[in-house]
Image (cartoon, rainbow, N blue to C red; front, top):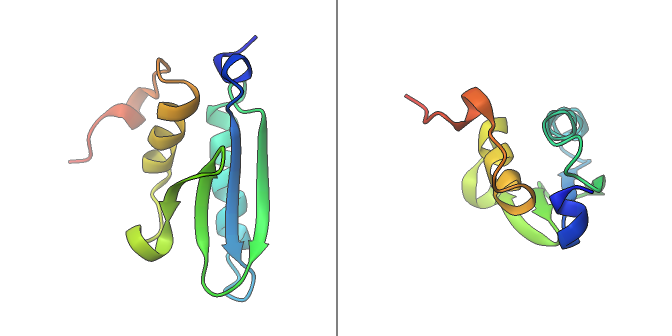
Length: 99
């Protein structure tokens, strides 16, 4: 059983603006997260929204909001997800600070 399954965490939600056409961006980020956290995530949901929204949540906690932080780099989101669902997991080259 994975750490996420034991702790009850591991649900990620990406809410994206349908008016802005951000489904491809949300789907790409979802694919990145599912590939990286294949065993740790219990669910990943894409939630259509409006008004320029692009928000990533883990277990209902906002970890990224485009309005405050701009569009996320995948490595930044992976670190934030990892810190909540698999704190001991190495992300390999994604763990290295940006130069």
